[in-house]
Each structure stands twice: as structure tokens, then as C-alpha cells.
Length: 438
Image (cartoon, rainbow, N blue to C red; front, side, top):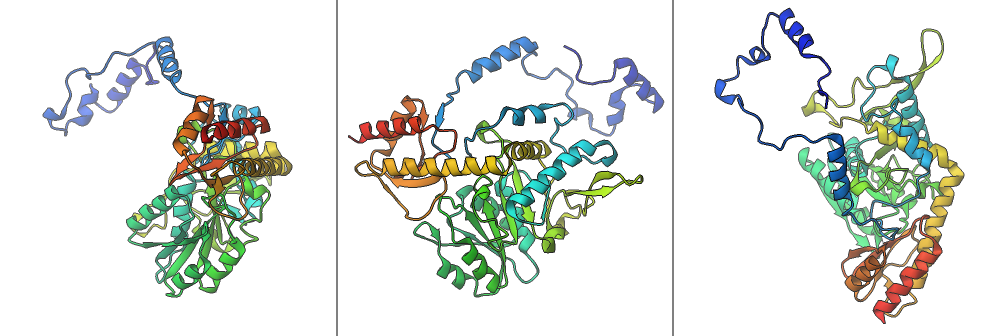
């Protein structure tokens, strides 16, 4: 095995000689002697590549991979075309880091620019950043965008994914701001309670998830109107696949659109790395955190790409910063861009409509069984919550038959169906549930 340090011992000695030293330890002469570790580290000796491959493969063989997945709750098993995996793996793109040197990074900058353009087309917004860590981080950064000196309270609907609520709460704690939860009514945001909570005039922004955590479509347009009448900003957290067939955040009056980009070509991968997308109107683009790639012309008048508006992604003066977001998940953004370009508007709309129709079919068939019913009435996308007896037994029986059932939630099961699940598998799952309940 070769050294991971690219210079040779002779080259390193030459560098030391150039600065008047004989040993690297002389660089640390101010460090107390007792701080040095003058022995080998107490770790096992290294292995060859073949040995490591065998050991890791053996560990991976213990994983259970389900051929059929009926669970979502924030991470979704969509079909990923093979080209979506191939292009981001090319060595020209295989980095997650921000391209600082525009002269050397035109290809990566263009890929981010195309990604930003497609996010704007998907959301109806004017400008998008070059992505952030994940959807929950995007929600927290959007809440920070809304704050000013007089308005320091963020409202978030109780129908939001619990993980998103917790991340926004953590961010608010760090900046000494307040987070208040808008109650839910029948599985959707309570409009009347929202009106009351906006009366104090101290609310900077309101976050609503669409579709919400229970899979239901919120009355986003009306909620946006209520928020704006109170002088606050409206943030919509969106499922990007659903955006292919539902009203855009712009059409609903949102000031900021954010969401988890995992459905855009990212495999489930035990929870990451994922992708947070953010987009806003031209009015608020200077408040948008992170990186923005812009298009311009070079000294020869030819099309080129540059990093725009901000000197760097994180703000240096932390106590005065509106954001401390750092790297922009460029590789995941590239993956999402390739997915959207490959699928196109029609392909994404088909994936969305198939997911929605299969979820409705599964819900209808399950609700034919004795004791099974939808907990909430109303239009839903590709997820729904059922009250069901013997929930643990049902999920165990499905697992024994190679099906990852829905998420157990407070005496019920939260189901999901995507375009990947064939109708025959839905029927088989319903048959298994029927046997358990019988």
C-alpha cells in the first residue's frame, strides 16, 4: 500500500531545509513535551484492499434489503434512472465541495446553475441557492431569513415533520428566538388558531409543509393570505415530486420555498447524504443563504458562470451573521439536476400521478378490511395514516414476506406508495394484512 501523503520523504526533507529546519517536530517546538505521543497508536494494523473489501461485504450481507417499500415519512423509494447514478460518478464532478476558482470550475458551476434553474421552474420562484445540507436545515435557514429587529417569533404548523420542527427549534434556541407551534385540526393546520397567533405583530415567518406530514394537502393559498395580512412571511416546505402536479409555492403566495431533495434521484442510503433546496422571490434574494451561481459573460463576450452576490457561503462575523451555513452539497445538487433533466416535466408528473394513484388504491383496499380506517379525511398525495388493529403483528407479517410496511404511529400505521411499487405487490400486501386481521 502506498502512502496517502503525495510527497516523497526526500521532497519533505527538501521543504524542511528550505525553511531552515531538520525535523518536522521542530515546527511544534512550543508544544510542551508531555503532550507528544512517542509511541505507535493502539489500533489494529492496517489491512489490504482485498481484506477490507471482504470484511465490509460480509458486514453488508447482514443488512435486510426490502424489495417492496411501503414507508415514507420524509425519505422515499422512487425509481432512479441509471444515468442519474452514472453522471455524478464521473471524476470531473465527484466532489461535494464549493467551486471557489471560477476559472477552473466552469463545468461544476454550470451544473449548479442548471440545478438552480430547474428548482426555480419547479417552485415558480425567481432565485434558488446551490442547495444546503437537507430539507430540515433549509426550513431552519428559511425561518432565519424572515427575522428582523422587531419580529423574532417563528410559527410552524404542528402538521410539519417532527424532525423539521426539532431542527428549527434548535436554530431558534441558538439565536435566542422563539418558536411557537400552530395547532392542527383534523390533520391540517388550524386556520383560526393561526389568525389568533398572528395578532401580536411579532411573528416574522410561518412555515407550512405541503403535503403535510400526514400526507394531506393543506389549503396553502388561504394560509398564505392569512400570513401576509398579518405582515409576516410565508414559507412552504414542499415535496419536489408533488410539485410536478400541484400548485407551485409561487402560485400559493409563498415568499420562500424549501424542501428535502432526496426524492430527486438520491437513494435512501440509511438517511444520507441528502439535499436541501431553497428558492425565493427576487425581493428576498439578498437574504438567501449559501451559494448562488450566476450567468455572465467573460472578457471575450462568451457565456460563463460565477458565484454571485456573496463573498463566500458562510458569514464571517458570526455574531452579526444571518446564516452560518457552509458547504452546499454540490454533488447531491448535481444528482438532483441530472434526475430532473432526465425525467423532464412529463416524467416527473407521471411519477407523481402514479405515486398518488397507487397510494389511493392502497388506502381504498386497506379500508375495506374490518377495523381499518383513514384517521383523517381529505385529499392526500402518496401518504396516509390508518387506524388499524394489531399494528405490530401486521408490520411483522409484512416484513416476513419481504415488504417494509408503513411507519407505526400512535396506534396506527402511516403508509406510503411510490411509482416503484407494482399493483400486484399492493394487492399482496393487502392480502397479508387481511390474514393477520382475520
